[in-house]
Length: 438
Image (tube, rainbow, N blue to C red):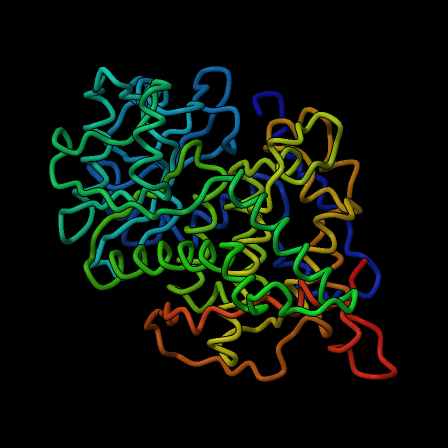
């Protein structure tokens, strides 16, 4: 990022024909100015800025003088009480240098809770400590009213023990004052890939006319056997836990998985959608996707197999699992979202079509090195041109600032039929074509 021109708009360009001007002006772009605006709106709120520089949070800019993590965006929000040297040491103790950074602060100044994201630490089997990391976490903990932090580790406890053998692991909480661990038990990318293959095979059997109940098991029983819905449930449960902690318990939360670019954004984005109504609007939702998935380095290239550089064993439906969770929210709260299922279908169609630059490459720095923002159009233009098609006609905004907490009862986690069975002739009304956004 060090070579970027401060005046560069990130390839945002002119408004496309037919795009609603009001929406287009608010749509996120991949430029750092959009990220700064998001920080101002959702992290560095007025009550947070009022505490600086004695405590609170500050924005740091990576460059030649401060290189922390090359898979993070250039601008990061960190505790104000930590020096640049301490930041480097904390980054050194985290996998891939992905140190804890704040992505949201509670709008209630009396609450003080924050949501941060990172990668796993590096204690290894020798239980190595980092006094800088411990102090850094303590700075975040002290900002919230409860003076408590819960680390939402998206993995299972068994998985973290396996990572310790490779020099990684999870936080040694006995050295972190007021810090607790919560394990999300979300399966890894390899289990997710196998589950999707099983679901696709099941759907092909239905669409080819094969009996869904053949072999002594019902179709729903076979679907349950794929473990896909179980993974959707685990992701939603991690997000709900995060919401309950920051809103009701006034507790700081740090979310991470192994490297912090797969299961981590699944939880953070869903939690923010539940917490604030603005993230349930089209613009707010797209802003979250841009910040948490694109800017913070989800490996779209590797997970989706966009190029020959992506190894087959690294491909996984991480983003599809997240979209499935969004579908669960839309289904349980049909009047609370400005967008409908068609926006989710649009995202999945264009994720794989690669017509736009938004979901290309693995991180912001690689995007910048290849000039993708200048050479490609953002997907958000495509959304702006089809705004009416993706809007939810039953959307009824209200002033209730209580978070949405979906039911986690297994009977309320439904199969994502609008996506998986979109081309099933039995489900498409006669005389109509399936909805596509290619």
